[in-house]
Image 1: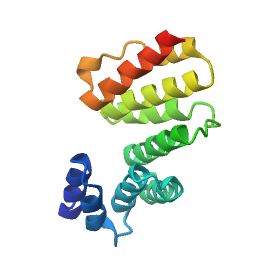
Image 2: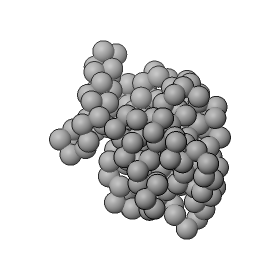
Image 3: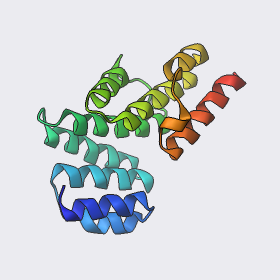
Amino acid sequence: MDALITAAARALAAGDLLGALNRVSLRDDPPALALRGIVMARLGEFGRARDLLARAGRGFGRGNPAARARCTLADAEIALVLRDIAWPQGLLDRTRAVLETAGDHANAAHARIIEARRLLLIGQPGAAGDAIAGLDPGRIPPALAAGLHLTRAGIAAR
């Protein structure tokens, strides 16, 4: 990863959306497109974000399946926010499997949480509980742990 991408990712992680965008706004390589897509999503520009993430995923190609899976995961989260829940069967399962194979356990857990949220949205709390069964909030980043707890609370409420 080059220095500008690293700096943009750090700015994004720190919540400095405009700082992240400034570092990658003129670049069209897949990592920059992915970061721009995430920034656009956080700014509420979901259509643009989905386009950028799709371009990034295509740009990563078959040579970097984990990066492609991360783009798919980000797009799935945007789709969930937009209530566009007509995803291909097994999309998040395949994405999660790629991420687990790559050793990206945090994003694999994120995929399970997103799938559980989708299942809750379509009225399947039992399946949602199954999707996140066994996830340990102590073994994932705090932001994901908060999402996991909220998802479990949603399941319990139903």
